Image (cartoon, rainbow over all chains, first blue to last red; front, side, top):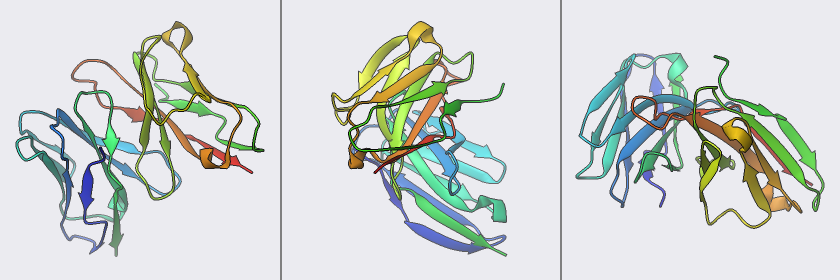
Length: 109
Length: 115
């Protein structure tokens, strides 16, 4: 079953912060975050495994609460290059991912 | 490493024709995945291989779809008797089967248009 992402879209000015949420109705083993720009392949950002860890990639970080079956992606001090559609992929195991419908992030100068 | 590559990048075919796509994964990756993505949606899992063994197929994958990964290297995805509903971006991804290394790296995709 597809995870649910919120919000569907967000518009930011450079330097602003945003949070993207991903929730599942199924028990999760892993959450994978990707960013996809128009016409390009999804680019891997980070993976979080069961254990509630938080990871970071540049000024993008994420948390995973397996009890709540939720993950959040934090965009800090956004840059123009952060624009794109962010997908969370969730897995009951570590191979088969179900992706949400995505959150479109637009960062404006 | 040059990453995951896919060929062709674009394919236009007439309804009823067969098409075949190729994916070359990152060389040391033993897992290979196929996904389908339509406009405004996230990638949708189709099937995956562990080396040359196809271990799971989505229920979405009708009998018209077949995938192979001979010798555990490149993979092919064939669609027989294409239908307009098959029009989509077909993405291939690869990964290792152990941590760290579980992250899936995607290729550029093959965009299929069925007319």
